[in-house]
Length: 259
Image (cartoon, rainbow, N blue to C red; front, side):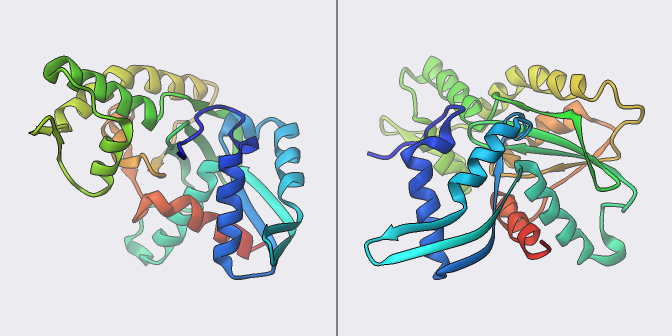
């Protein structure tokens, strides 16, 4: 039975390899000019990890007995950069109604399942010292919500059940024949994590002479963490791309297309 691998060496797992091969298969291509992928910010800042992933993906790969795909070059970026490119692309299509000024200092927060990553970008430059990773991500939030539900109902829903319900826009789950509204439990779980997440991000920004102008909240966990991030930066506007769960993938494609 397949399940997510939640550890720092995920890129070396069979699950990651399977997803990589599936992605290649779905392209229907035999040759790829530029393959773009991302790493959590803390791992991206480790050059040896970036080089290892580039080497892992570059060249020919036999993905089925009769199908080989070759990637000519590989670009590895910090994961939130994909979401930023997608947001900017969508914002530019709005013309004067867009939210992002070209001179803005942009804080990009990308809550994923394993990690919550953030980067500060100003004048097109990635500020490494103000960018980092927290493991207080979607999996932890959903696990904590499940524990809170168990305290009241005597049974704990799985992380997957909660995640699937949120993705489907459902506000309750069925447990032991009873409908349970999980919204309040997600909120309580978020509140218990908010100070830790806010402190981590604000601590990384303390050496900056100026604060961010806007927050771009992107990635698959954007809806889970919106209140937490807005509370951490109450004076800033928090915006997200449409269908933010796909924002990194769309942004990676944009990055590859301008290579």
